[in-house]
Length: 236
Image (cartoon, rainbow, N blue to C red; front, top):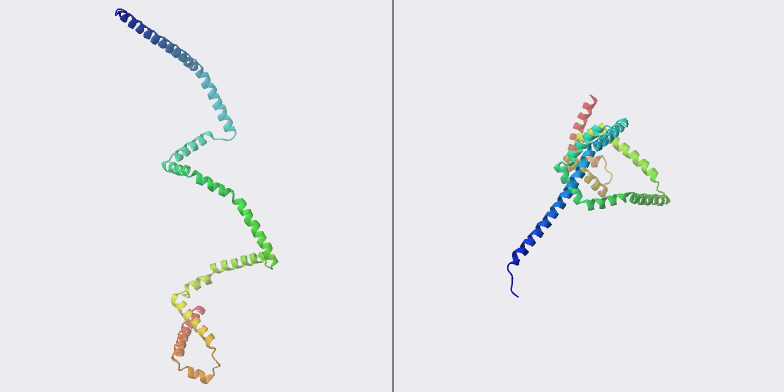
């Protein structure tokens, strides 16, 4: 069969017409859709004044009721704006970000906090049981608490007293003084171990020739002079 080239243009033209027709159909549909949308917008615009009036009346009524209840709307709005400014501060945002990142650990902590009353109840029960057992052995916790309070009161008075201040300023806690007291304590301990016998006047006179005793007596004489001077100053 021989191919007829005269039919090709007609077929191409028919295809183009079909495509144009389809495009026009789509365009008309789109125009109809836009017309309906514009109609809806126009209807909304017509209703907008009424809606605004209703909204305004509702706001006015809410504001009036709030004022009657003693609520200052303007002050609350001002505080809300201030709070918004604080919340949007970069430092606080970073803090909130860190808090959100550690929300799981915070939740675990809150769960542990929720168990505190139960833990305290167990501790109180255990303490009650301990007190009951102690009473069986003659231990009076009430008396111990009372004496502890009295001792605390006495200690508090002592810490606030002028005598303690004078003691702190006397040099009794000076390292040199503490060293002398330590040496005296060592000497007393040695005397306790040696168990010296009785000493009469003749023995005392002989002992005065001992250089260690002479050193101790010199210290006592020096101490007596200074102590006597302080006593005279206090009396005057």
